[in-house]
Image 1 (cartoon, rainbow, N blue to C red):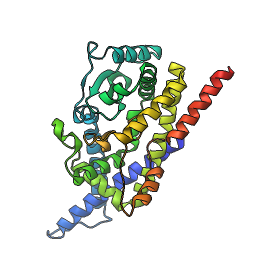
Image 2 (image 1 turned 90 degrees about the horizontal axis):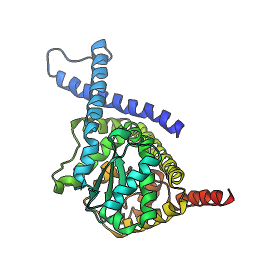
Image 3 (image 1 turned 90 degrees about the vertical axis):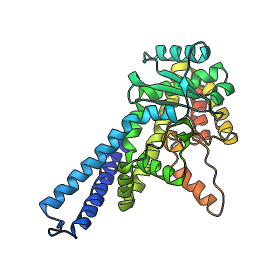
Image 4 (image 1 turned 30 degrees about the vertical axis):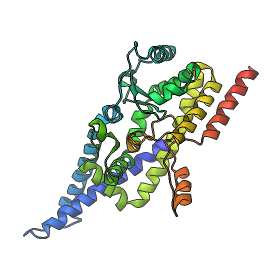
Length: 318
């Protein structure tokens, strides 16, 4: 995890520089039709690349400030009151008190596909989002295990870490979703967050394709490691690895059975407790599935369950 985290700093920086170069090239092309064309390699041109790089990166980072609220709005979630969701409220409070963590704001989205995730860049402004589908599926012990998993993410500041290290990939994902058609949040009055800065950073990834591939692989590896860490954190909180294992199996099965066209995958895919199901068919289905396994943001379910079983065996020995 540490190696991935350190290694991701360079690809993010390199993608930003590539974006800056792309902007500078565009400006340079425009100046060809002026009396004083821009000459690359000069201090002026180098300074332009530097300014463009900083500007693109700053614009993307600034745009991320709305990411937590966008997730809530794009899924049509609403605050979970104690009257409507007493068990959920009590569980979140109990788990948070156990680890001395701030109680997150709790939201419920009317999506049938089982979802749970946390947003917010610090424990103090964290929000826990779950779907109606999740609440319908899980018993009290499984719900506690899932909540503990999400609170562990909050304690580890995983949302902030993954947002920072995967900036270029997230930007490209937003652009790709926008180009693919109407975004999932539109029906809830929340348009795509993709903007010009995202487009420029995406161009940077294309220009420096090896950097983009490196960023994708490292961010996926880091994401999987943090899921394992959250699983361990959940077990440390509840002492019930079996409950988390059964919850994960139940959720993954239901994710494959229940469609969720209203879920903004580009925005929340890396933050959900299990990977969101994406169907693939046609001539390239097998190739796509193999590639998807390499860049998966979540560990394989059987691997997670095996590690939880090892924790169960350890508990029984002691």
